[in-house]
Length: 165
Image (cartoon, rainbow, N blue to C red; front, side, top):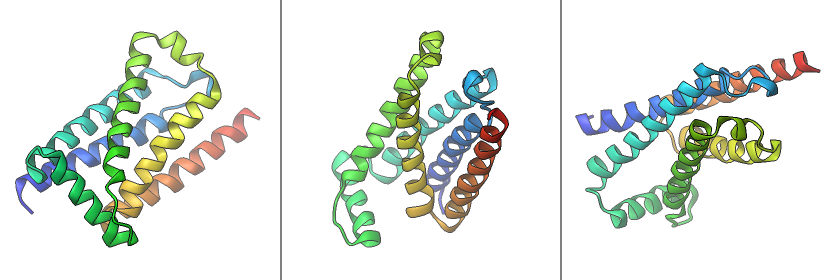
């Protein structure tokens, strides 16, 4: 594995860790956005954006067409469906996370008062993307980390929910 591969993997890991640590920092619905949770959220986003830049630089030569072809090839290899739609989902993933982090930074009170369904949709989409990145398309280590996060965060949130009832 060369330096470019390491940069891609390390930034992906840091983005995933930022996401998981941001969620783990939550302490129930009334304190969703703790200072540490907000910092982890921003760190995860920054790492994701650097990860995307590294992937485009080292793997795709800054070519959207090459990234689309690589995504379609990987998807076909795994699912039998030759589609690059995953690349567009990754773009949406970055935009959604960036929009949420920006909203949180610029209008924290408004962000905290957003409807519960909005947060559920946001986190549902982001969790779906991380599950696919780690468990479905990830390396063996990525799969292990993905499942550990699913089980760990699931247990954590179940305990938090039980405590608030």
